[in-house]
Length: 387
Image 1 (cartoon, rainbow, N blue to C red):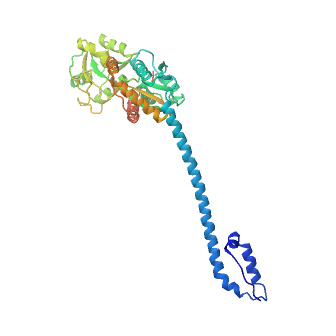
Image 2: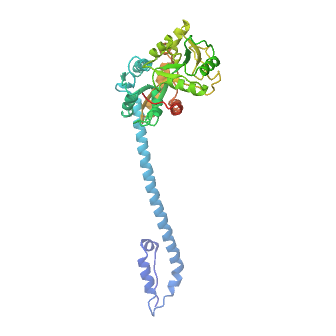
Image 3: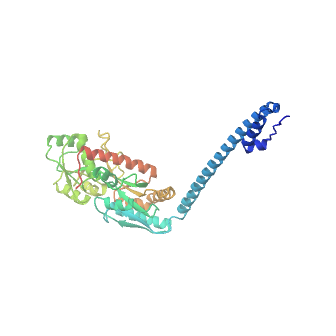
């Protein structure tokens, strides 16, 4: 009597236990089971098929899970992008605060208000200046850094934003990492200016005289750590000369001291010194910017006169807290660039001795990074301490 091993693909697919029982039955003692040898090839083939099918199904199941997870992620990203775009398209829909970390009346405040007025006109919502002076611009900057990153708080600032990084090692914020650069609004070249009582006309003559009388010279600035101070310390280092730093609270008293002859040298902006240069009360030797200033195109740069790496300028720019959507950043950068090209804006900038720029967020970030590294180097080499 023969036991015929009957199998089918469906039974094989469901599991191997029934198949094993049938094989056991065929192998009972005293029973001939020649059919098993006949079926072994097909059984092996079916077992192989079973393993192959199960492997394929497992891979398909895992692939489906991956696809589902990836598709979910894709939906989340798409939805976030849609919300960001919608936010940018409706921005602004309420008043925007522009923090200025300086007292009212200075160049930074004046230009911030001008840009705020024009942004209000162009974007149909109020952009208002909120002055938060204190601690060398640190107070207002801290407030801006901690503000919501929705685009409704901006920061219009100047050199102290990058200089304070080297001057105050324990800042509660990082000038680059905690902010989004929008645009560099303007640059203010500084002029190396002397009192005519010093009988020099050129840079070589000035350096020669300063080296001959190392204790006879002092220079005035608008305050410790400001662009005038950085320029003065750079000049000393690069020329091997000595002069005492006399800080004041503002550019006007610093120039007044220069006019009186109580200090002999100053690095100052065009509006502070050019009127006195034209009347013969002061004399300009060179400009601190990398290129000649359009306010005094006949005045050479210190680079032209042999100080190859010399560049130190005052700057103004608009930033936002970190995380403000790029669409809002780009919108503001584009609008401010247009504003800076308008005739009325150029006239206002000229009155402050500022040359309008209006570059891209990426370019402004690079500018601030270079300025921060440069200022930190000067501060460390000259052991400059905050007041």
